[in-house]
Length: 69
Image 1 (cartoon, rainbow, N blue to C red):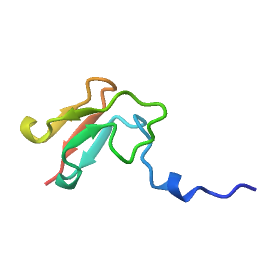
Image 2 (image 1 turned 60 degrees about the horizontal axis):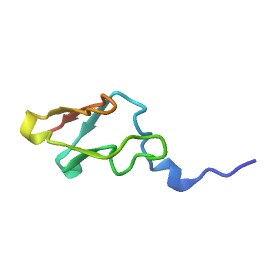
Image 3 (image 1 turned 90 degrees about the horizontal axis):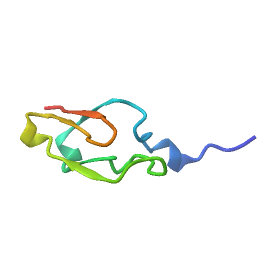
């Protein structure tokens, strides 16, 4: 029986979802985000979510981000 990897439990699956809610603590926002697994992801791109009314879409994977108050 294998043991769970505690480090893997804290990561966010990269590009596994289409929508993410982020807070001001996550700014500057990048896709993939720092906690995401990067082995199957695209190059990091910064998204100007605050300047775009609280919504941003990644040009690589199409993930949509919404900034919470």
